[in-house]
Image (cartoon, rainbow, N blue to C red; front, side, top):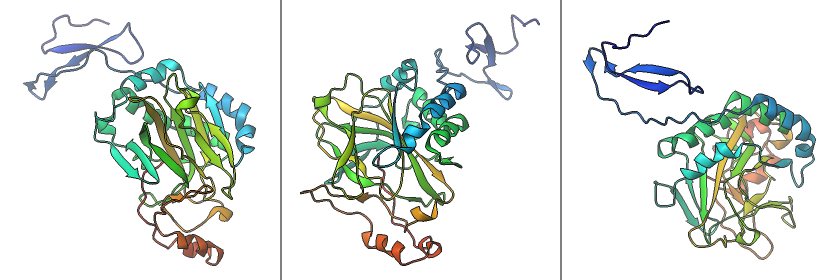
Length: 315
């Protein structure tokens, strides 16, 4: 194969995806009119999840997920190569850099962003991987929840950031995604906090159904992944104010996975985030909590017909 050393139009030599030894000649032309095109010489190639390694991890640890207490869950360290996460951390926006969705009320003090246009290229590519068929197959295999569907809009998910003094009270997440008419089934949290110390706080806490005991605390260290089943009684949060040094923040990625329908014994009235009080604590409820009692008296088909309140972002 030969290549014209002097093509009749201007070109830009770009590395082929995944290859440093192949250059693609990209014409800088649109129709019959030449245009000036600015392309970064270091186009991010991103990270691709490995189906083989993920499925092996699922086979080895799915029983651990199923037996997780107080509800099915698993904590996995270093599932992803450090090299895949460092570029994401380097482009993670500071609290001042982008237009964060800001929550500042007694139940939650945090920042969130689901707008892809605000995120860096490596971050966007990684989020797409977490919504890919390969990764969702892994989540299905380890959780036992089949037919999972990703959310391209990342409602309630995306990037989360907590500043010193921030918190998120214990809660159960919204259960029905009205835009896509789907049921929320599995939550993913990936922490990106290097050199995070125990005394900084920010532990993810998992509580029992009676809100009597915190069964598990998870320190949000770098490259720590948490997966758990989302139901009306999967109470979780980081309810204690963050005590990290000034200028530090608790950074995480959140993704949620859905199904079209759920087990009959899990069906309830559609609701937004339901905050739960620890002993001696008060929380301000969102939505209309009286509806939760209806599931004891109303058939599931009628429960589905009740319009849910607006869904806020949450971890």
